[in-house]
Length: 297
Image (cartoon, rainbow, N blue to C red):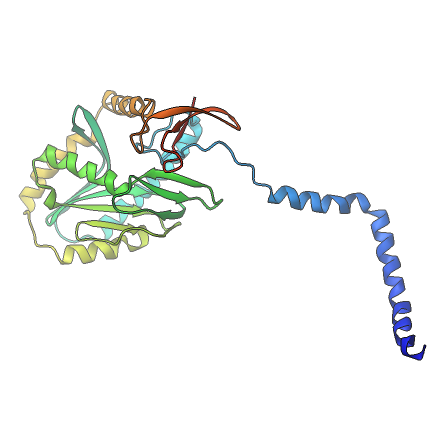
């Protein structure tokens, strides 16, 4: 019995604490029951129907997005372009001119380019992606993956291919070989570049904080191709493409939406099929799960 005496004394000392806890639980049992309920609700992730973010369709247009959301995304995109333009004027040496929102006629339609810089060493075409989250994709893949901070995954059209199409259209319009062009895909500093392609001589994938340094390295290694007069001649041909009227812009949007609303997947070219999901009917790519494109009915 002497062996258990210290344990019994310890229990006597602990007993008042147990009684205090019992009193607290008895008085507040309703509130305490809410704690696990609140914790469970915070852990439940309600998934909405998978759609494409504004700015993540191949053409930066989505019909189902409210006007106020579209204007927010447009302003976000403009801020990214503003920052790139500011970096160009602050860091680029030599003779050059910069143009914003260039509408290039090509194949009966138009191709809209975020920024074009005509420099004495060549023509630089910039595709701005003012995203946050994690970005990954390969050089030749049709789509890249954008993982948002909330861990939702979305596909968006490969910006390298997108800029390649822009360069092809501008090269054809100016009658200047594509070897004189340089492609820059510029992401914001808020995102993280995961598994993306290595930079090449003519294709640079970077973020705004490194853009000035990347340009300095590229320009220092390039010979001058154009004099001041030639830069001005090329600039004079591009300038009218930035001052297009509302009818040209409206046609550009209509052409995009016509392709967006067809029965062909705009990301992989496969047929769209009608599916039924948790939130109702929707159009989905027939190549699912390789391609996860969906569109509301």
